[in-house]
Structures are given as C-alpha cells and as structure tokens.
Length: 562
Image (cartoon, rainbow, N blue to C red):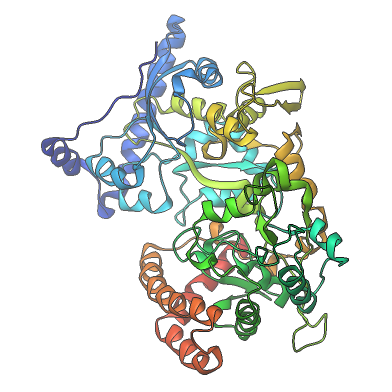
C-alpha cells in the first residue's frame, strides 16, 4: 500500500549534517566512485534476490512537481501499473505549488527522494554537485526504451547530456505536436460582411484593419466596439520576447527566422547568431506597428492586459458578438470558445511590403517544433538511491510506447485512452461532460510534465482540439519547412560552462532592462524611434551584447558539430 504525500520538516541540524557530506568541485571524482559503489551494492543485492527467487517489490521514494489540476497520484491507475511492471513500490510526495521557492532548501539539505519528476533544471546539477546520480551507465544497462529514444531522436540525447558528457535526467519526446505554437487567426465573417479578401501583405493588413475599425464589421450597429488587431504582451518576464502571442511573431515577414519562444530576441541567420532587438529590420517593424497603434488599429489596452483578459476578449461580448478581428492563439476552440470559433480561420504568414517591393524578404514563421515536442529534465535520481537499477528500470517504463501515450493523455483503465492496435491509440473524449479535453488530460495524466517517448511511428487519433490544431497549421507548413541548420537557433540544445552561464545571466538582465525601457514607448508613440535608435543600439552593445553573442556563437558551432 502506497502512502499519500507527506511534508518534509527540515531542521538546522539535518541541514548542517547534509551540507557537511556534500561533495565539492575538488572532490567530484569521489562522487562518481561513490555512485559506482552504490550500483555494485545494488547489483549484489539483486543477484541475491534472484538466487532465492524473491519477488518482493523494491521500495523507493519519489517526488512529482505537479500541475495544479492533477489528481492524487495514488489515484492514477496507469502509474500503479508502471510500478507493478517495474516491481517497485513508491512512496510519492506530490508538490502542487511553490516548488521553485522551496527546492533550494531541500537540495541544500541533501535530503531528496530517490526519484524526482519535473523538479530540476540544468543548473541544479552543478550548483548541488554530488546530489544527483549520473545515469549514463544505468541507461546503457537498464533502460532499453530510453536508449531507443536516444538512437531514433538524437537531439534528445544532446538535450540530456551535460557539457561534461554526463546525463543527470532523462528528457521527453512527444513527436506529434505541430511545428509552431502560434496561429494568426482572422474573422472570416467580418471579411464577408465587408466584402474583403484576407490580407497577404503588411499594406493589405493595414487596409483590412481600417475597414474592421470603421465599418461596423461585426454588424451589431455599434461601429466603435471592434478591436481590429489584438496581441498578448505579457506572458512572462520580458514577455515582448517570451509571449507566444506577441506581435513579434510578425517579424518573420522580415526574413527573421524565430525558433520557439522566450529566446530574448536571439536568432540564427546564415550560421551566425544575432539579436533582432538591434537589427534595422526590427526598427522598421516597430515603426509600422506604431503607425497601426497610432491609428487605433491595435488594441490600446494590450500593453496592460494579462493573459486571461486577452483570452476572454477573443470570446466576444455578453450578446455573442465577436469583438476581435485578428489575433494569435493555439487553437480555435480554445481561443474563441464554442460559440465564436466557427467565425475564425487561419491567416497565412504575411509578406513585408512597406517601403520595399513584395518579396524583398524571405517570409518566415516562428518554428517551435523542438520546444513543443521536447523538454529536458523530466526525471532524475538521487545519488544516494540504494537501488539505482530498480529506479532506472522504473524510469524506463515511462518510455514504453503504450505507457508514454498514457503518461501524456491518461490511462487505458482510467477511460482516457483506447489502444486500437499494436502501435495505434485513440484519445477518448472526457468522461466528465463538463470538462474540456485539455483539463481532462491534465487531471488524469502528467501530460507535458511527464517523462515519455511518443514515437513518430505511433498512430494517434487525437481529441478534437489537437485535430483542429494540426489542421489549422497546414497553410503554414511550407514556410515552416524553409528553416534549415543555418537559421535554426537551437537554444535548448546548446551547452555552456558555469562561467559562461553566469556571465550571460548577469549581462542579459542588463540588456533586457534597456530593451524593455524602449519597445513599448516606441509602439505607443511616446518616444521617437528614429531619434532614439542609434543611442539605444549603443547602450545595448555597451551592456554586453557582443560578449553574449560570442558565447552563444561558440555553443551554436559546437551543437552543429554534433
């Protein structure tokens, strides 16, 4: 019988004792030796069990940094089945909030459970040297599913391996997600009402937005309630870069290939790492957006609205009238709700034709495939784990084909998934009629937080939201396919020394402060970008951008060499 989650009370004595036992950089070699001794001890114990025919389950402890919706882990039947398959019994601790603020105390104490899911980042392994098990040898001997993932998807091994060649946590791969997180949607009903065609260029975009604003596009008799263009400015710190639904998505019209979100403006072009925040194309882009803003064609409250406001505005007013003409989102039913989503269609990436001929730039769209389908640090192991082989076998069960589908969507026995063939599965609609597929998934599964390997070859019949998401992106595929090695900025795979990490962290904060002080002033017209630009670029460079570019270029070149 597994116990429910328990709280850990850390005393000063425990912390002092644990810290006294932690290794240092100078004693890193002894850490590996200690882990080797632990593994040998476990092997001896396993051999003894085999000789006596014992089938007693190995007892382990585990921690899961949980999504707030996920039910008690002891109620997840699919998880119990994985434990049974690996012949382990795990006492779980489920953390629902504040893990990022409490984990430093836990890690500093040295008192961590055998297995931790969704609980670490790369820097933890160097900051808390000796706390985590190097899994490299254990994977080779005890994790055939993980090895298969590394062989079939080599980027996952690069993602998991430190600059020193060690693996402290296994990643995930869920290869069925589309290549971009963001679709630009336009209200087709508004276009039809006004006898307009969908815009294909920036100039045409402006004309359509003006018509939306001036001609009562939603037909409710009020010519002033339409918001021609909306965007989400704040999805996180420095969210002008980090929000998946920022206006910066449109920078692809200038030939700038963005990859994933949250990259602080860095991109690759012809094999060189650059930052668009000091690129003249960014200046031209902002001047055009400021023109739209000045004419009331962009939501005047977007800079101060949070995501929930951004989302609710797209779902119309209390009378069922659509209020937004063009906006960005993941999927139409999620973005516009059950009553309005049929009014909207995807708008293909636009060409830039302002002050230049159409086709001057090679139009792109942000490619998020790696960010949507891969994540590092899904599950790690304590260096003090007394049964590392058993723990590794359990970890590997998550990467079984059928198990991975259940980790992502919920269990077969829980009524979330149906296995329809040897390598085919159907995601079932929620048993709770009041719950949407996304909420149902996060309630009954680890979803995006879990370790998994969803193979490209696995056949998945998705729920309606994912079916729509894939269909909506078909018009983007040709442009997304333009990206190659020379303009793919693979930030999540690039490796840095501790010194470089510290340099970048401090320098980037100063760079972002300067960028953040300007972009919104330029967009709203409170400052003149032509007058500010040269001083702004000089300030960003003086803050250390050339040094960061040099560090990132070296890491990029190293990634390409692999």
